Length: 235
Image (cartoon, rainbow, N blue to C red; front, side, top):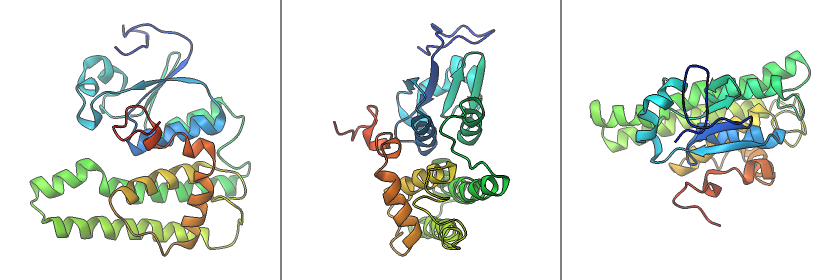
Protein backbone atom coordinates (compact mmCIF):
# COMPACT_ATOMS: atom_id res chain seq x y z
CA UNK A 1 0.00 0.00 0.00
CA UNK A 2 1.29 3.45 -0.90
CA UNK A 3 1.22 5.43 2.38
CA UNK A 4 0.27 8.85 1.02
CA UNK A 5 -2.88 10.85 0.42
CA UNK A 6 -2.91 13.45 -2.32
CA UNK A 7 -5.93 15.69 -3.07
CA UNK A 8 -8.23 13.72 -5.35
CA UNK A 9 -6.29 10.51 -4.78
CA UNK A 10 -7.07 8.10 -1.98
CA UNK A 11 -3.83 6.23 -1.42
CA UNK A 12 -3.37 4.92 2.08
CA UNK A 13 -2.65 6.97 5.17
CA UNK A 14 -1.09 10.43 5.02
CA UNK A 15 1.14 12.10 7.56
CA UNK A 16 3.30 15.20 7.34
CA UNK A 17 6.51 13.28 6.70
CA UNK A 18 8.19 13.35 3.33
CA UNK A 19 7.70 10.08 1.48
CA UNK A 20 10.14 8.86 -1.14
CA UNK A 21 9.28 5.93 -3.39
CA UNK A 22 12.44 4.21 -4.54
CA UNK A 23 14.13 0.99 -5.57
CA UNK A 24 17.35 0.43 -3.68
CA UNK A 25 19.50 -0.56 -6.65
CA UNK A 26 18.28 2.11 -9.07
CA UNK A 27 20.67 4.93 -9.91
CA UNK A 28 17.97 7.61 -9.88
CA UNK A 29 16.79 6.59 -6.42
CA UNK A 30 20.39 6.74 -5.20
CA UNK A 31 20.64 10.37 -6.36
CA UNK A 32 17.57 11.32 -4.33
CA UNK A 33 18.78 9.48 -1.22
CA UNK A 34 22.16 11.23 -1.32
CA UNK A 35 20.55 14.66 -1.61
CA UNK A 36 18.21 13.97 1.30
CA UNK A 37 21.09 12.67 3.41
CA UNK A 38 23.35 15.63 2.64
CA UNK A 39 20.61 17.99 3.74
CA UNK A 40 19.74 15.93 6.80
CA UNK A 41 16.08 15.72 5.80
CA UNK A 42 13.99 13.11 7.58
CA UNK A 43 11.71 11.13 5.30
CA UNK A 44 9.73 7.93 5.11
CA UNK A 45 11.18 5.56 2.49
CA UNK A 46 8.73 3.49 0.47
CA UNK A 47 10.62 0.61 -1.10
CA UNK A 48 8.98 -0.51 -4.32
CA UNK A 49 8.97 -4.29 -4.42
CA UNK A 50 10.06 -6.14 -7.51
CA UNK A 51 12.52 -3.83 -9.20
CA UNK A 52 12.07 -1.99 -12.50
CA UNK A 53 9.31 -4.29 -13.76
CA UNK A 54 7.46 -4.20 -10.46
CA UNK A 55 3.69 -4.54 -10.53
CA UNK A 56 3.61 -1.80 -7.88
CA UNK A 57 4.86 0.70 -10.47
CA UNK A 58 2.02 -0.27 -12.81
CA UNK A 59 -0.78 0.15 -10.28
CA UNK A 60 -3.11 3.05 -10.91
CA UNK A 61 -2.42 4.40 -7.42
CA UNK A 62 1.22 4.84 -8.33
CA UNK A 63 0.55 6.00 -11.89
CA UNK A 64 -1.58 8.79 -10.43
CA UNK A 65 1.59 9.98 -8.70
CA UNK A 66 4.07 9.21 -11.45
CA UNK A 67 2.64 8.52 -14.93
CA UNK A 68 6.07 7.41 -16.15
CA UNK A 69 5.94 4.43 -13.75
CA UNK A 70 9.51 4.98 -12.60
CA UNK A 71 11.31 5.95 -9.42
CA UNK A 72 12.00 8.09 -7.52
CA UNK A 73 8.83 9.92 -6.57
CA UNK A 74 8.85 12.35 -3.67
CA UNK A 75 5.64 13.37 -1.90
CA UNK A 76 5.80 16.43 0.34
CA UNK A 77 2.34 17.29 1.60
CA UNK A 78 0.29 18.18 -1.46
CA UNK A 79 3.35 18.33 -3.72
CA UNK A 80 4.37 15.36 -5.85
CA UNK A 81 7.81 15.49 -7.44
CA UNK A 82 9.20 13.11 -10.06
CA UNK A 83 12.60 12.83 -11.79
CA UNK A 84 15.74 13.06 -9.69
CA UNK A 85 17.04 16.45 -10.88
CA UNK A 86 13.75 18.33 -10.23
CA UNK A 87 13.58 16.57 -6.86
CA UNK A 88 17.06 17.84 -5.99
CA UNK A 89 16.20 21.35 -7.19
CA UNK A 90 13.02 21.28 -5.10
CA UNK A 91 14.91 20.17 -2.00
CA UNK A 92 17.47 22.92 -2.58
CA UNK A 93 14.79 25.60 -2.73
CA UNK A 94 12.55 24.35 0.07
CA UNK A 95 15.27 23.10 2.42
CA UNK A 96 18.12 25.58 1.79
CA UNK A 97 20.18 24.48 4.76
CA UNK A 98 23.30 22.56 3.69
CA UNK A 99 23.11 23.68 0.06
CA UNK A 100 23.99 21.35 -2.79
CA UNK A 101 24.45 24.24 -5.22
CA UNK A 102 27.01 27.08 -4.88
CA UNK A 103 25.93 30.57 -3.88
CA UNK A 104 27.17 32.24 -7.08
CA UNK A 105 25.52 31.99 -10.49
CA UNK A 106 28.67 30.86 -12.30
CA UNK A 107 29.28 28.17 -9.69
CA UNK A 108 25.71 26.89 -9.94
CA UNK A 109 26.03 26.75 -13.73
CA UNK A 110 29.29 24.77 -13.51
CA UNK A 111 27.86 22.28 -11.02
CA UNK A 112 24.74 21.80 -13.13
CA UNK A 113 26.89 21.33 -16.24
CA UNK A 114 28.92 18.54 -14.63
CA UNK A 115 25.71 16.95 -13.38
CA UNK A 116 24.09 17.15 -16.81
CA UNK A 117 27.00 15.38 -18.52
CA UNK A 118 26.12 12.41 -16.34
CA UNK A 119 22.34 12.84 -16.34
CA UNK A 120 21.68 13.88 -19.95
CA UNK A 121 24.72 12.87 -22.01
CA UNK A 122 25.65 9.55 -20.42
CA UNK A 123 22.86 7.89 -18.45
CA UNK A 124 20.05 7.93 -21.08
CA UNK A 125 22.23 6.03 -23.56
CA UNK A 126 22.72 3.08 -21.25
CA UNK A 127 19.50 2.73 -19.28
CA UNK A 128 18.01 -0.73 -18.95
CA UNK A 129 15.18 0.19 -21.29
CA UNK A 130 17.57 1.36 -24.01
CA UNK A 131 19.88 -1.62 -23.62
CA UNK A 132 16.97 -4.07 -23.77
CA UNK A 133 15.61 -2.43 -26.93
CA UNK A 134 19.00 -2.49 -28.64
CA UNK A 135 19.66 -6.08 -27.66
CA UNK A 136 16.23 -7.66 -27.99
CA UNK A 137 14.44 -5.58 -30.63
CA UNK A 138 17.29 -4.43 -32.87
CA UNK A 139 19.13 -7.70 -32.41
CA UNK A 140 22.57 -6.27 -31.69
CA UNK A 141 25.18 -8.83 -30.72
CA UNK A 142 26.43 -8.74 -27.14
CA UNK A 143 29.89 -7.65 -28.31
CA UNK A 144 28.37 -4.69 -30.16
CA UNK A 145 26.26 -3.80 -27.15
CA UNK A 146 29.31 -3.92 -24.90
CA UNK A 147 31.10 -1.59 -27.31
CA UNK A 148 28.12 0.78 -27.23
CA UNK A 149 28.16 0.94 -23.42
CA UNK A 150 31.95 1.30 -23.28
CA UNK A 151 31.93 4.13 -25.83
CA UNK A 152 29.33 6.26 -24.08
CA UNK A 153 30.76 5.64 -20.62
CA UNK A 154 34.19 6.74 -21.83
CA UNK A 155 32.76 9.81 -23.55
CA UNK A 156 30.77 10.90 -20.51
CA UNK A 157 33.34 10.28 -17.81
CA UNK A 158 36.11 11.62 -20.05
CA UNK A 159 34.24 14.91 -20.38
CA UNK A 160 33.76 15.15 -16.62
CA UNK A 161 37.45 14.36 -16.05
CA UNK A 162 38.36 17.27 -18.32
CA UNK A 163 35.95 19.59 -16.50
CA UNK A 164 37.40 18.60 -13.14
CA UNK A 165 40.98 19.00 -14.36
CA UNK A 166 40.63 22.59 -15.55
CA UNK A 167 41.86 23.84 -12.16
CA UNK A 168 39.43 26.73 -11.87
CA UNK A 169 37.71 25.49 -8.74
CA UNK A 170 40.11 23.25 -6.77
CA UNK A 171 38.94 21.24 -3.80
CA UNK A 172 38.09 17.84 -2.44
CA UNK A 173 34.82 17.62 -4.36
CA UNK A 174 33.68 18.53 -7.86
CA UNK A 175 33.34 22.20 -6.99
CA UNK A 176 35.32 23.27 -3.95
CA UNK A 177 35.36 21.55 -0.59
CA UNK A 178 31.67 20.77 -0.15
CA UNK A 179 29.63 18.12 -1.97
CA UNK A 180 27.18 19.38 -4.56
CA UNK A 181 24.66 18.12 -7.07
CA UNK A 182 27.61 17.36 -9.37
CA UNK A 183 29.02 14.89 -6.85
CA UNK A 184 25.62 13.27 -6.41
CA UNK A 185 25.25 12.61 -10.13
CA UNK A 186 28.87 11.53 -10.57
CA UNK A 187 28.82 9.00 -7.74
CA UNK A 188 25.49 7.50 -8.81
CA UNK A 189 26.69 7.12 -12.40
CA UNK A 190 29.93 5.48 -11.28
CA UNK A 191 27.87 2.92 -9.36
CA UNK A 192 26.22 1.83 -12.61
CA UNK A 193 29.42 2.03 -14.66
CA UNK A 194 31.27 -0.23 -12.23
CA UNK A 195 28.33 -2.60 -12.07
CA UNK A 196 28.69 -3.19 -15.81
CA UNK A 197 32.47 -3.44 -15.76
CA UNK A 198 33.48 -0.02 -17.10
CA UNK A 199 37.19 0.78 -16.84
CA UNK A 200 37.56 4.16 -15.12
CA UNK A 201 41.13 3.58 -13.97
CA UNK A 202 42.65 6.35 -16.09
CA UNK A 203 40.45 9.12 -14.68
CA UNK A 204 42.54 10.57 -11.86
CA UNK A 205 40.21 13.37 -10.79
CA UNK A 206 37.04 11.33 -11.15
CA UNK A 207 38.50 8.57 -8.98
CA UNK A 208 39.94 10.94 -6.40
CA UNK A 209 36.63 12.71 -5.95
CA UNK A 210 34.69 9.46 -5.95
CA UNK A 211 36.89 8.20 -3.12
CA UNK A 212 36.31 11.38 -1.14
CA UNK A 213 32.56 11.09 -1.63
CA UNK A 214 32.39 7.46 -0.59
CA UNK A 215 34.13 8.32 2.67
CA UNK A 216 31.22 10.69 3.41
CA UNK A 217 28.27 9.02 5.18
CA UNK A 218 25.68 10.71 2.95
CA UNK A 219 27.10 8.83 -0.04
CA UNK A 220 28.31 5.69 1.70
CA UNK A 221 25.27 4.92 3.85
CA UNK A 222 22.74 5.53 1.06
CA UNK A 223 24.57 3.35 -1.47
CA UNK A 224 22.52 0.67 -3.24
CA UNK A 225 24.42 -2.09 -1.47
CA UNK A 226 23.25 -0.73 1.89
CA UNK A 227 19.55 -0.70 1.03
CA UNK A 228 17.29 -3.30 2.67
CA UNK A 229 15.53 -4.14 -0.61
CA UNK A 230 18.83 -5.02 -2.29
CA UNK A 231 19.23 -8.81 -2.42
CA UNK A 232 22.96 -8.32 -1.85
CA UNK A 233 22.37 -6.10 1.16
CA UNK A 234 25.02 -6.55 3.81
CA UNK A 235 24.15 -5.72 7.37
